[in-house]
Image (cartoon, rainbow, N blue to C red; front, side):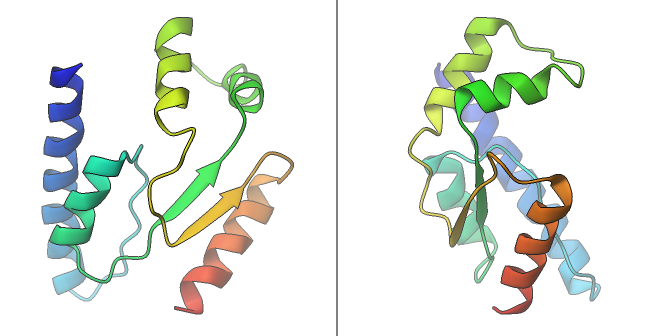
Length: 116
């Protein structure tokens, strides 16, 4: 709902401020976030030139992965969040992680990041 959307936007503004502080201190910055189209607008505005990667996985794949870690969402919330990004926001790179190991995903991200 609207409260959830406001939380996404507030989070993106706060994360952006923190990222700028680290960047200004000469650190590389990587942010892991659940990004909606509207929160992506915040990141693009607040962190000009940021490189955005969307890691895509099917609902079944996400549910399978969720069995390996604590889940703090109801089944309904899990599906709703997944549906929110069924069409990814305008990321610079979309990686289908369905059949990729964690190491493969990291390699793909590193290679893409270093080539920008």
